Picture (cartoon, rainbow, N blue to C red):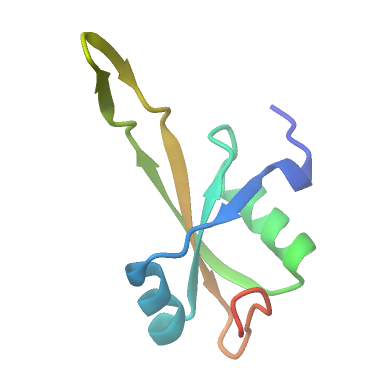
Amino acid sequence: MKIDIHDIILQPLITERSTDLRESMNKVVFIVNHHANKHQIKHAVEETLKVKVVKVNIINVEGKKTRLGKFEGKKSNRKKAVVTLKQGEKLGIFEG
């Protein structure tokens, strides 16, 4: 499936754990399109953010079950990508 390069990275994931990964191990976490694979994610990060990517790890997150009164539902599934950047590379979007 061909996905536009700008539709692959949906948003950065900023949590306490992802901040620790970014500061200590030079890894950045993104929420990505659930149809994207590792090669597409690597290409999208390198082209749009102008950094060199060493490795991409993917985590499929199952949506939680929700309930509103007697009605049951489910939040949508997500895909997280943990992107390892080349030593010395920094992303300006996270720097204050």
